[in-house]
Length: 171
Ligand SMILES: CC(C)(COP(=O)(O)OP(=O)(O)OC[C@H]1O[C@@H](n2cnc3c(N)ncnc32)[C@H](O)[C@@H]1OP(=O)(O)O)[C@@H](O)C(=O)NCCC(=O)NCCS
Image (cartoon, rainbow, N blue to C red):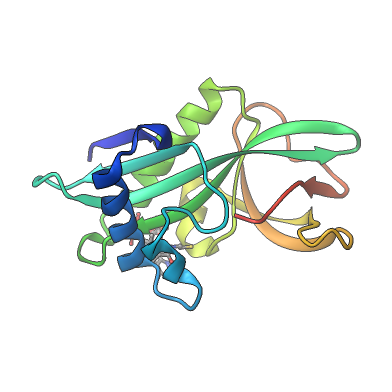
């Protein structure tokens, strides 16, 4: 399985249509219509990993935001994994695990302490993600609220105790 890195800045109009096509095919819940007109849910991000089939068609995608968390006055860089999807005809072949392995290697090489995502534990447990219950978000500016997330440790630094604040929007 050949996983490719795709810098968002390198995506041209045809590539944009291709990415939006896959995201729109895979994400079909209310609110997911945004992918018909843009290739991100709420905020753009710089990094993507993709898989193409033997005909060169895009069949799998993972996005990564560069984000930070803060805990007890310390700041840690995290990769915010988003828009994980596999074309319905190609599911169940381990595409997610293969793409995430590439993401984790990249995060490690670029001094990120953790990978984080909001998703189904059944999908990400085998890639090393564990649920955390001390994450706090302040999306509306009205105070920090608990949110369940999943994280994977990338370096020797352990996930902090106490409240962990994720600045900005959920991804
Ligand atoms: C979720 C999705 C990306 C999985 O794609 P896939 O090709 O089946 O994934 P993989 O073959 O790499 O499987 C990864 C793990 O997820 C599990 N899994 C996949 N689909 C699952 C489902 N619907 N429910 C529970 N577990 C699931 C697999 O069993 C596997 O676990 P394992 O490694 O412990 O055996 C795909 O179904 C999809 O694109 N869904 C729509 C988009 C979406 O909802 N994305 C966010 C998911 S949190």
